[in-house]
Length: 207
Image (cartoon, rainbow, N blue to C red; front, top):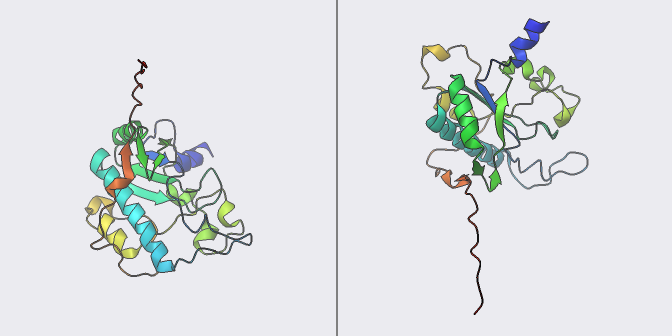
């Protein structure tokens, strides 16, 4: 049993994965009625574009600055401990540690980033199997991960350039349909801001 749990959640020695807590803000989750139906007048295509923009921006920023990413996933759960969580598994442990230390001092989308190392190493086992086949009865409040899918085209763009070492790896889930939405769209670097220490305000003496 201990070996099985370690294969899912890792051990203290496994530090390849980091979690950016509550980083993704789903516009639809913030505009729902009591019965769970969407109130926001946003099409599925627009929602997929919004998410693809976010996913690509975070993926490219983190891989460029910290090191090669094996896998990145975003939770679509509604529970406070999982909502909007971004899990990034780096190829090397030292890259994950470097990312956590740096991201703690940065902001994204006007909010401070809360980054820490995560013991999750096997996303297949951490995910809700019922959700993947559309049968989860706990909806967004399930304690297993509900992973939000990216478009097929974006997955090919981000993971398709990988070499033979990536054959057989589980990439981010794919959206079942949707147009190619990202070509030509501007980079979203303005989301990323490094935290600045507040400078002391000089005292002013009135004459």
